[in-house]
Image 1 (spheres, one colour):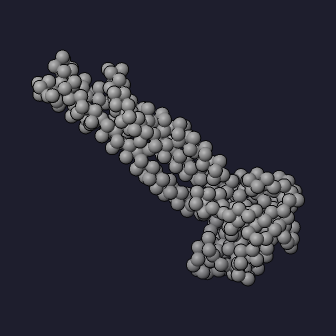
Image 2: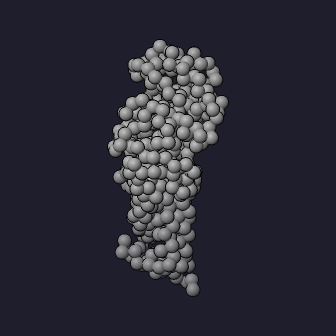
Image 3: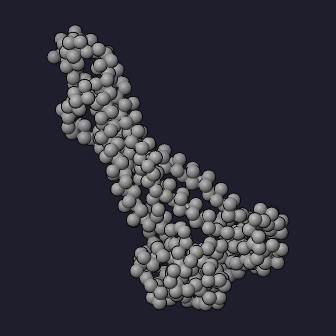
Length: 379
């Protein structure tokens, strides 16, 4: 019966291929978009896990556009339990080496600029710890020099001692750093005042203040103490609180991605339903002959369901191959981690078969209800 079902499909090759193509696109979209969302989640989770201490920024404007009073740094340093506090300005680039930043598909790989003060060779981006692969870190008060992330060094083929043009200004590269996250490896570190001038940031204002504690286990207590000291004007969050809120946001993003990708699968299901229904109606007389020769209603249903399942299997297999290829392309193009799990592949394949079977239910039932006498009389 499986062989018969397979041969039935290829009577109308064009229609069958189009049905397979629709489910292929649906499954490929699910794999590509979900793997990108999973990779983004893992990369940002890795980045956040490296952030130590407490972050402070002005509540009314949000962390991306905050203009926090730089004078707070001295006040925070006086709080018992605070080891150090540093101002931090964060900005994005308009262009690197004359290449304009693309806020479309490459938006996730936009290079970020971090301006702060530097005292330790082990410190890279604010409270994030990393390692200097080549060269050295910036020195206190050093101007017109930068340390670039490994991803940038690879992308622009830059080495220690080279010059790099950021927007319309040129800086000397004195070091190359690496953290455990591509998100932070796509960064450029520079002096606070250099970035203030480059980004046109107001005097006396910074994006946020990074606080390092004497005892990291006292983070929650210190958060409450600093909140009490500063009042309601500023948001004070620990790395664990930030990670928790970010996790909730990313979960919602992943759900949205799955919902959007599933629309393509639903379209594929409609395509299979149409294909199978047309195939059944075209074989009206043939199915009547089968029933007249002893085929039961259940046999007819199984034959049609086999046909729709084969569409799901072929479309699912092709969709997995295409989805993995798309994921690899996106990973190389966007310079982001893409995670294609074995579970995702298995679930996508099962989903493709389920879509095929579901779409074939009505045509199978319709075929099983044909009256063999009426079918044989049909022209």
